[in-house]
Each structure stands twice: as structure tokens, then as C-alpha cells.
Length: 557
Image 1 (cartoon, rainbow, N blue to C red):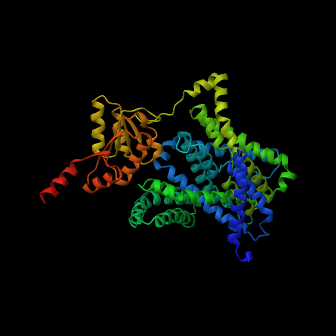
Image 2 (image 1 turned 90 degrees about the vertical axis):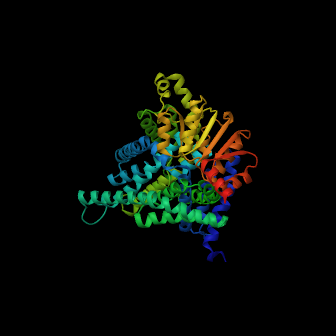
Image 3 (image 1 turned 180 degrees about the vertical axis):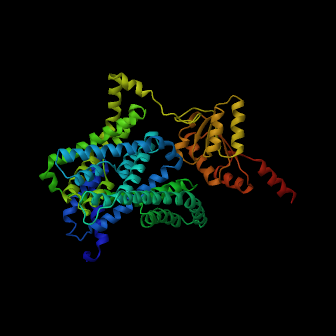
């Protein structure tokens, strides 16, 4: 009977073995994803016996990549992207160019490969896996940290660059003589580059201008139905459908399309709920991604070319980490940031497989290179947690032994003037993006009270910063932003200009840390008084000029 049920047998084989090996890995104090990779390796020879479809598994894994990248977007706002663009854009481009040149030359001169094969080899080793990076940062609670934001922004730039590279490979193959037909001239190549960039920018513009308006409206209508399953369905539809449209209409990768879908949803007041509702689905399909990677391995390469596999592994883990770390250091970031970014990029993943497969189809490289890349990739993914483990001791060692490291450790990236970059004590927390929040902050400052302002209004943040006030720029309901305030030492919080849903989330998060804090909410509508009173009885002070006028009008009527 199972012969007619390839989807179910694929799920059974993948999830069953992933559970067993994932549990074993956790018991041995290793990351569960190591177990998932081993599950794929073990499953591969037996997939045909139970009619498990490897092609179907790869398609399901693609959904996992989309959902994971959607999750990255939910944690990574447009403001975060703008904050790290000064290092992520030049850093990623410099790192990719350096890796392609160095490792391509290594294959050309040391292994005596052809120019086309060497180029593909360099390309495959130049781009790290965003999926693996996300898992590593989530596991360590560093996704919202400064270094985490830099690493994710770095890999987003890598993804965009890889999209361009994939478009350029066919004409490059013709130039290098691996394809039949007349080679394309420089004008044709320049045209293809221009068209590719236009597609990427058109997609990004569509997301940030059109989708940024339509998605919040659509989600609000869904929420109004009070149907939890419809909301969950809407989140999955947004992630997968936008990724599909990005691929089909703009020829942008599924992963990049899903990422920007998450970025747009993150800007809405439903971001936290979307994160919670999609979390389990993302975890389940991410397991399929790692299992499918294990299935791609031809284990014979480990026996026939062990030294080559170890050499590639060394390039990925030591070479790429060193390149990335040096670039971050040259861009005047602290030593620990250099080590952390190096650890983040000491692995390769999904785009490396895509580039290798494209190279095979264009006859630029043989299929044995894909096996070599996959084998080294699996080992790099499995060993990547060790790179994070040595960051702290290596940082301490360098600081103790070398004066240049001590000088570099004092480097601090220049934040916007007055902006808070770490956890700071405060007496008063003002949350909001309207004029009332601005007036409150100025009033408390004039009274000599330590004030921290949390606002998503960029103009307001700059104006408050100019007045030497401490400012955190970001969404009020973003837990990572609120955690930058030392809530335990804060006596009072004033919320102004927030929707009820957002205000409720902020108050709930504050109460989790400081249940005795006095909180005042400025609301402009009488119906919100009853809503706040229902959730926080005898707990809040509600005020507002508009509210008073509304109450007077109701009394006179």
C-alpha cells in the first residue's frame, strides 16, 4: 500500500529517523541538527526500499527554508538592516570576493582544476547558510544582539549577491568555453546584470511600498474574525505565496522572498503573534531541510577522497572564518565581534548546493565536486557549534597576550547620538511615537529624572537624541528593544500613542520583570478604558485630553 503514498512514507522516514538521531545527539550534548544530518545520511540508502521520494523531500525542505527565512524577517526589522548596512554590505562583498579568488586559485594551482571548475569551487565556498546561522543564533539567544544582526544582514547581502551570480553563470560558462554556441559579449553580460538588479530592486520596492500597506490591512481583517486557525493560515500563506511570487515573477530566490515577507509582517502590530503561531511549523520543516542535506551525501567520497574532504573542511571552517574576521577587524569593530562573525560564517549550506548543481548543468564542473561540497558542508554544520564555543576563550587569550587586541577591544561602533546600545538603568520609561510622548520625555528630563524613551518614530528619535536624551529606536512590542531597558530599576512607565494590542503586549512584558512598576497609559478613546481595565484591573492610570473631551461630550448628550 505504501507504494502509492510517497508523501507519507517520506514524512515517516524523515521525521522518524530525525527523532531518533536528534534525541541521541541531545543526549550526547551535541546540537540536534547534527542528529538530523546523520538521519539523512542513514535514510538515503533505504529511501527507495520504502518508496520515499528524495525529490519530494527536497521540495519539503525548500518550504522549511522559506519558513525559516520568514522567521528571520520577523526578528529582523528594516531599521535593523539599515543599522548594519555600513558593515554588512561592504563586509559581505569583500568576503565573497576574497573567498572566490583565494579558493578558486587554490583549486586551479594546487589541484590543477580547470578555470570553470575552480570558479564554481570558489563560489560554493564563499556563501554561508542562513538557515544554519539562524539556528545557531537562536540557540544562543544572540539573534537580536548587535553581532547577530550584523551576521544576518551579512548573509542577506550574500543571498542577493548569489542571486546575481546564478543569473550570470550561463554567460560566464560560454566565455569559459564550457557551453556550445557563440559566447556573449560584455554588453550582453552588462545587460543581464542590470536586469537582475532591476528585478531585485523592483521586488524589494513592491514589498516595502505596496505589501507594507496591504499586509497589515489583510491581517487586521483576519484578526477581526477571531479565528486562530485563519490567522495561522494567513501567516503561512504570506510566507509561501510571497516567496513563490518572488521566484516566479522576479526570479529572486524563495529564501530572499520569504525573508522580506517576514520583514513586512515584523513592522505590523501582529508580529509577536505571527512569530508564535508559525514557530512550530518552522521547526518541523527545518528538520526536513537538514535531513534532505544528509540524503544528498554520497558517502563513498569520504572513503575515496578523505584528504580532499578534510582540506575543504579546513578551508570552510578556518579559512572563511579568518577572512570574515579580518574584514570585520579592518572595518574597526572589536576583536570579539570579529571572532563572532567569523564563527557565524564558518559553514556552508543551501546556496552552495544550488551553485554546484548549476555548475554541473552548465558542464563547468563534474558531479564529484557536489559530493565533495556536500560532505564538507555536513561536517562544517556539525562542527560549527564548536566555533562559537571557542570565541570567549580565544578572545580572553588575545586580550591577555597582545596589546593590539586590547586596543581593538575598546573600539565601539558609533551609534546615533543619544541612542541606547546596552542595558541602562532608568527611573522613567516613556514609550510612544506621538507628540505627547515627546512632551512627557522633556518634562521628566527638566525635572532631573533619568528617562529612557522607546519609539519607532525615526524623526522623533533623532530629535530626542539631539536633546541628549537616551533613546531606543524600534517597535514597542519588540521584546529585544524593551530588554535594553533595566526594567527592574525603573519606577514608572508612560505609554502614549500605542494601539490597545501593542500597549497590552508592552505592559505584559513589563509586568513579567517588574510587577510593582507604576504604569500610566494615554489613550484617546473611551472604549479602550474598559479594555485596559479588563486586562489590568486597578493597575493602570488612564489619561488623555481627547479622552476627557469624549467623556464630556457623552455626559452632555
